[in-house]
Image (cartoon, rainbow, N blue to C red; front, side):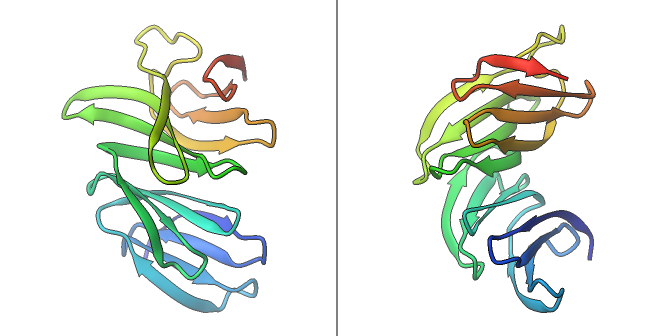
Length: 171
């Protein structure tokens, strides 16, 4: 096994994204194993919001929403999703690294809770322009005001975007 990401639900249950077995494993708050669910492809990112588990898998080109028992609720095809999270309204945010073979996208896609694309923002920049991404984002979160925090690995910075994708600040 190879734990790669972790999340905790409102009841204290722990969800571990295991890249070694390409699965999500659920443990109770004491660390006792409860169940697991296989994720087709190479599992990349996990987020737990409002007792739903959001997972990306790059080689299968999809993101999934699982319920707290790890049953699949929704699967959406996305070419190369990396980071994922959701806001309190159920909107889903996915950092999409590539749009196709050798075509770097570097954008954040916002989906409705039913998996319909709402908007795309960010995008690739080779100059380090703020509000866009030169490198992959491995972590993404949304705060209670709807601001999106994107951890851009190669540029060693966090970019904060508003819910429309406009740059608020960076650090």
